Image (tube, rainbow, N blue to C red):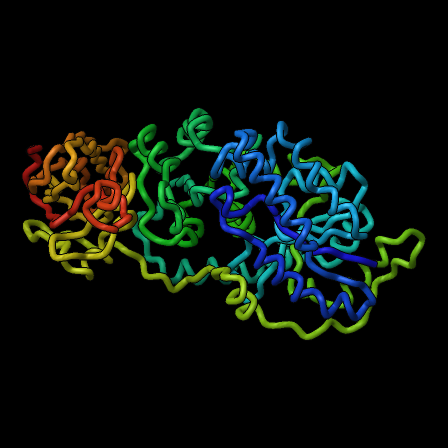
Length: 512
């Protein structure tokens, strides 16, 4: 039995992407002892096959047959027009008995299925709130799928840990705004395989009517940007279309487990799987090219959640046996090989664990006591998202979206901001929209500013009236922020917008 381990060979620097060959090598090391124990030969895809594919890709790029950058990777990953072209360089994958892949592309899986070759595709499972770590595994072989189903860890088996996680968050959350019916939209990183639909990266813009229908069924909409995203264009698009939405001021797990959260929506974030297990209604707006649903039953089984037994001889003995015709398929009961604990596996793969210890940001602003944003303590307390660290001039916004969150007393009439803009030596205009929402109030205040110089200005925004103290969320939308590097000032790559120097409250509701 010969097994080759490979990866998405077109996710590579030539197309502006990170190279997952290291993950494929890790997967080989992880399963090799078990495979050797059951008599299988396992190795990485031969180097010459990878080199030939890269040479072919270089020619495609030079002739313009493949677009450069992310667009080219998406096209190679799932594009129907490239499917026949990709097949020409995937022929070496027909050699082994089983192809073991680390996050194979949709076109790789389609190619293998169309040629009747068996594959097992492995990725990282979404569940992060347990002490264990899980893999998501699928195949195109019905008998292998039956074996994987035996080792599958179901949502019901995780119910106890999910309940403990929810209970612990509820005990420490103490959120006075946890009322009504909230919709939480979970953002994603800018480029990810789970966003590729029809060979292109999906965006939220074409789904705004569906989101609008969802908003009508909920009292409040909370947007949770991904902590590693840079552009956050989907979050900006949602805020522009629905200014009543607010940026979440804490971790996505606090937001999901909040008793007020009724529905979790996303384009295709794996957090939606966790939200489902944690007892929330889930809306997934897109169906990625590599999803089992998009590929179809002839290409891919459903995902199976496998724990560390993925590296056990018991699992691989049964899988290899099922790949042969007419073998005894009774459950193998041999002891599993000792494997690292979940924490060690997470560390090796750089996979984070959900945490309940993240401090909840937000602090009360007091009337006529402005808060200086030159102090990191205040930045940490009030700046929910999209800000850098405190500097001597204040705190800079980074990217197209930033938000601050704070509690206000009932008598508060207006928020007062002092800030300057980053313009640079080249004449340009920075568009700034300020959207102020208050919990329990159905409308928001909105201002637009067009800044063409770097002087500090003071702005006053009326706070929507309410009879009691509550939470305010101020969202800042910035049109085309730019980096000092891009205008030749320094090597600073941060996309700077405004520098916020202080924030305060007054009882005067006059807008300045």
